[in-house]
Image (cartoon, rainbow, N blue to C red):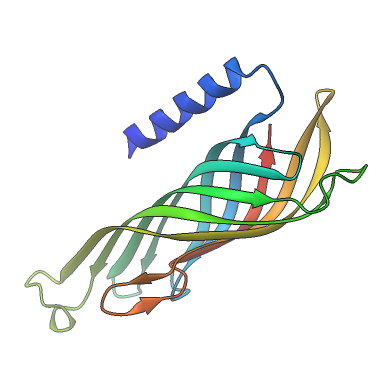
Length: 189
């Protein structure tokens, strides 16, 4: 995980430092995330980099990190670690308007690394120590929808957005329409 984060940060700063135009951007994000069963709920942090193809179209790649642990009153616990990397094409229908604010939507592909641990009562587990661990990597889709508007930070125009991001579907022995849904904010520098 540390290698993925370090690589994303290095690429982000290299691209933004060498960009001669305002077409490149970085976008940190903070979102409230929930898994498919709405069992794990908590903050998800993200960092992305992107490029404006036109005034109305951008492509971006971002990394999201979500880790949540639920401890039960009897000392047993469940823990979920979801890490996602996506590539998204976003469309901004109102971007050419004078105030440059409005709704956007997009979609793309994602890879998700899932690590789920369940320390449960032994008779509910196939494992003799009561610990079940499920680790998977899979490719899926990603979708987002939001509202973006310009803000001025240190005399420069940036774009702040409230958005809804969903990752899925996923199928193993069952189907999850969305493995993760996130609602939050991001800022494009």
